[in-house]
Each structure stands twice: as structure tokens, then as C-alpha cells.
Amino acid sequence: MSDAELRITTPLTCEAVRNLHAGDRVLLTGPLYTGRDAAHRRLVDLLEVGEELPVELRGQLIYYCGPAPAAPGHAMGSAGPTTSYRMDPYTPRLHELGLAGSIGKGERGIEVREACRKLCAVYLVAIGGAGALLSRSVESARIVAYEDLGPEAIRLLQVRDFPAMVAYDCHGRSVFPGDEPL
Amino acid sequence: MREIACSQITGAVADLCRAANFGLPQDVSDALRRAKERETHPLAVDTLDKLLLNARIAEEEQIAICQDCGIAVVFVDLGREVHLDGDLYAAVDEGVRRGYADGYLRKSMVRDPLRRHTNTGDNTPAIVHLRLVEGDRLALTVAPKGGGSENMSAVWMMVPAEGRDGLVSRVVQKITEAGGKPCPPLVLGIGLGGNLEKAALLAKEALLRPVGEPSPEPDLAELEKDLLEAVNATGVGPMGLGGMTTALAVHVLRHPCHIASLPVAMNVQCHASRHKTVVL
Image (cartoon, rainbow over all chains, first blue to last red; front, side, top):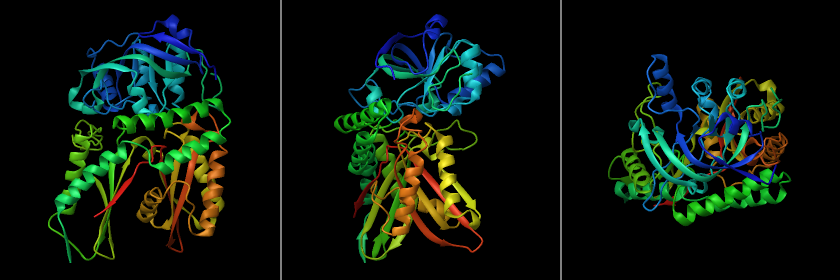
């Protein structure tokens, strides 16, 4: 573990992605889109029929998070990551569109690691279950698509010093014990 | 007969939904602290620290400890000398509806498991387990259960020849494969015996025991200890990033079973092992 935390501004260029290495601890500042199971399904369904997405994903990061509602006086309710592997069937397709990264928790399928390497993307993990703590890094949140999905709607967050760790980098490396480099 | 109004049940369930989500039970935070003292991996120590800090923030600010405020699992121990003035299930659901709305808790239920576009909007229906007991009391336990850890749970219809060693190796294999997905450190509830549904329910009930309290049955306490050691020897660690603390505790409950069978269920619980009880 490196003690130093890298301050990173989103969205990310490919050059910024190349500077990230598995095991790096980062503090993210800037926009993040939330999206999880149902929203991913809708995005990929749109791509299949050749329609435009409701959000431009180039260079952006998707945070796999369905937040709790904000209590009065809070910008955000509890907002930790959900388990990432459920989005594996959709993630490589979104990286092809230029999505720079995703944030979640837990190991993922090899197809995501390969997509990160081929398409200059990164997968980050945040502390699962630390939703109250992580909500403090969210300065604002508004729904930008699929409001009918409730907690699964796509939200645009503005975060400041949001703590995460690089799990899969674009160099084929993984932070999870037991994963060999690609 | 003692009369209990359903409105009392609704109010109690609403309170329990909020209280269970706004902090960690003392036994869980104590277990996290003990794990932190033992842990040798710096990143794991840091993660355990942050989980304790997270619980403090949730309690102080009265916000949900985790955005996954769970499916509302409610155990009802109904004394046989109690008379209710209405529909118990409707009263529990109304409590869940109010608790999740007033507590700003996330509503995590989709109406149709295959066509997943409609959230029920109020976190109902609850999963209610009703048990008839002696006396004139009614005990309610609300145990909100997160989806990420539930997804890593399993039921194994083992053959008797697999025995104790087979059970240990299945648990270890499953937890190794699960890695960081269920938010370790975990509490594992194991239901040993019965049949398909009995094993699953025992596994859920096993999670209600205070974390780290051994089974009163010596051979099960020994099995729990061996399972915990084996799971922590995997090196999965907090969040799957390595360490000695993959589980905080393993709890086993047992039931006799058919001569042909060895059913085993494992209910995987994340570190946010939430449950609250009240007796009416």
C-alpha cells in the first residue's frame, strides 16, 4: 500500500488513465455518473437499436451506486459502491464508447480487465458498506436520466476528494491477491 | 388472552427499520475493533478503521450506515395467548413503508424479478417469518439484509459421505470465489440439516446470534471455530484486498435430517450485520 493519495480530477483523459496503477489510492474531484443494474440494461438496449444515450460517457466515470435518499440538510444519502460484477455484461461495450472508468466493489470478470487494457480504461474500488462516510465527499447530486428507476436512476454527482483505489489499470494489472497480470 | 393492536406492531416495525439502519450493533463494532487489533495488513487495518468511522457517522447523523438498506426481513415471535385486532402481515408492511420513508432509507425492491423496471417504491413486501411461541408477548426482530452479500449465499444438497470435511471445503471455496463482492469482513450463518427450506431459514436465524458468541453445543462451537479459521486463512481480507479478517464470526444452527440427505445452507452477511428486536 502506498500512503500517498493521488488527487485526480474527472473526467479522465487516456493520458490520465495511463498514469494510474493498480494499488494507487486516489481522491477524485469532479463529476461522476451513478448507474447500476437497470440503468446499464437500458443504456445497452439503446445501443443495440442504434439510438443515442441520454448522457455523454466519453472520458467519464460511472459509479455503481444506488444512493439512499438525502435527509434534510444533506446533499446526499448514504452512497457506497454496489458489487461490480453484475455490470460485467455491459461494461466493455461502454468502454468502447469512451467510458474512462467505473467505480464499485469486488473482483470482476476477465472481460472487464481486458477491456481496461485494450480501451485505456480503469476500474476503481471504494469501501463497500461505508456509505455514510462516502456521502460526505458528494457535494451535489441530480437525476439526469431514468427517474422512474428510483434508486437506480442515473445521477450526476459532483464529488470532492472521493476516496478510491485503482483495482484494474490499463496496463493489465490487478490489485486483488491472486490475479496474475494480463 | 392479551390484545395487541396492529397499530402498535406498525409503529414498532417502523422504529426498528430506522434504528437497525442507523448504526452497527455493539457486538459487531466490538468484533471489528478486535479484528483491527489482530490484523497485520496495513490496508486491511485502514479499511476496518474506516468501517468503524462510517458507523460513528451514521449514528451521529442518523443516516443509513449503508445505502443498501436491505430487504426487510422480519421475525415475529407470537405468543399463543396474544390476540391481534387485524392483519399481522399488513401491519408489518405498513411499518416497513413508514420506517423506510421517514428514515430516508433506500427502497430496494423490484416488483418483478425478470422484468425489473418497477420498484415497489416503499421497500415492501417484507419477508416475514412467523413463529408461534408460549406466553402473551409478541417479539419483533427487523434484520435488513443487503443484496450484495445475499447474492453470495448458497444451499448445498450434499451427500452424507461428504461429511464435516466436505462442508468446510465448500464454505472455503465459496468464500474464496466471492472475494470482495459481499463486503467482507463477513458474518456467516450456516444452517446444517433439515431440508432445503429449513436449512436456509436456520442459516438466516444463525445471523441473529450476537457476533462471536459460540454455539452452546460444544461440537458446533468447535465446528464454528474451525470454519472461522479456515475462512480467515484464505487471505481474502476486508473488501477482498487481502488480510487476515475475511470473517468476524461463523454461527451454525442444526436440525435433524433425512437419512439420504445432508442439506447445508450458508447465508452470507456483510459487516453491516444489522438487526434490532423489541418485545411488545
